[in-house]
Amino acid sequence: VSSLRADLEAAACIGADERGGVSRFAWTRELAQANAWLMERLSELGLTAELDPAGNVLGRWESGKGTAVLLGSHLDTVPNGGRFDGALGVLAALDVVRRLRAEGVEPRRPVWIASFNDEEGARFQTGMLGSRAFCGECDLEDWGGRGIPEAMAEAGLDFARLAGARRVDEVGAYLELHIEQGPVLERSGADLGVVTAITGMLGFRARFVGEANHAGTTPMEHRRDALAGGARTVLALRDAARERGDMTANVGVISAEPGGFNVVPGAAELTVDVRSPSPETYAALEPLVRETLSAIAAEEGLGLELAETHRKPPVALDPGLQDALEAAARDEGATTLRMPSGAGHDAMVLAHHVPAGMLFVPSRGGVSHSPAEFTSAEHCELGARVLARAVRALLG
Ligand code: GLV
Ligand code: MN
Ligand code: MN
Image (cartoon, rainbow, N blue to C red; front, top):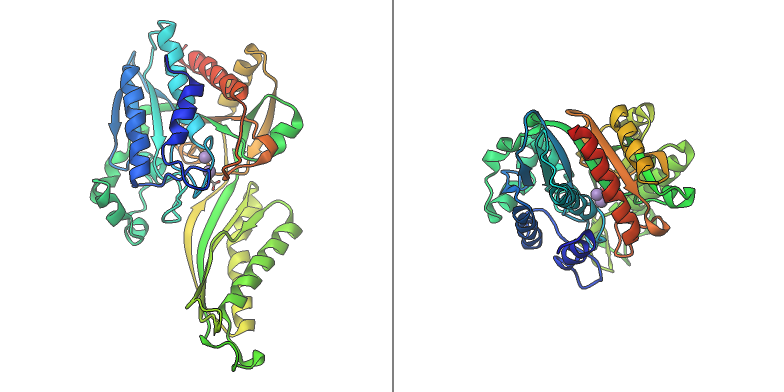
């Protein structure tokens, strides 16, 4: 008999990388393997399993009438990620259906499970492409220019059919169980977190252009070092975020061209990710990034190209579902903390279309997006049991 623990173990083996983590990216063989594995589990539970035009795996228990209760998360990961981020929510959804089946429940409305594609956006700095397509938010012009059509074609999917992934109109509520990915819940001592709101995220790809030249013969005052612009960006955004307090800033990828130890970098490319849960601060993030980088470019004598890669405003989760999750936790004997999420989630896309709720389990040491990510089996199982209770309540 399968169980949540066994499923977590099995899923972690798919796309296991040499550095002790998990690497499963959108439209790759590793994610396709995980999807195939999931579709088998869905079929075993008697759900109709399909891969939709965006590469989302959808399992449908068509029962009763009305809109579906959708449970979901994602199976893709960041590079060298952990085994819980995303996977827990998908596998807990399976566990909920397994429990309802074992109890002989005949749901009065459909129960669906989604494993959304490309939540992390690791390959193309997209993020939540699958849930956005599911919600009819296809940004075809942007996505078409990033190599996504080619990647989809390699996976046997047709970019031109992406809009066909829209199914949100058949959904009445969305619930997602996830690891917190930060230290707040563990430090609070509460068993579970009920998420009140999700932070807003804004991303750019920046390219500083200077002049490649000889590292030894070019006097320091005459260099136009593109990587110096990149380095100053890292520190300037860090300082701005520290000063402001209610935002984060991260440069996670940086590269220099042509990349020689004895060549002054002629170009430098970096990613910028800035976030805030406060709508006011979120609105100030774009001017902050643009002004900071423009000033650096001017001072360093560099050219600057700045392209937006992602924009997801902060969103509040449904108060009724927060209450339902809290009540389900109480009935399960668990303590809860109401808290915002600093990580992005598919729920922040769904929340603009249907009532959405999220439940957190603690992350040991607050570590995530790392192979060291860990949540105890007891916490995972408690989360799944509370999710099952909340679903029963939604089914009436
Ligand atoms: C997704 O995990 C994100 O918060 O970037
Ligand atoms: Mn993640
Ligand atoms: Mn996640």
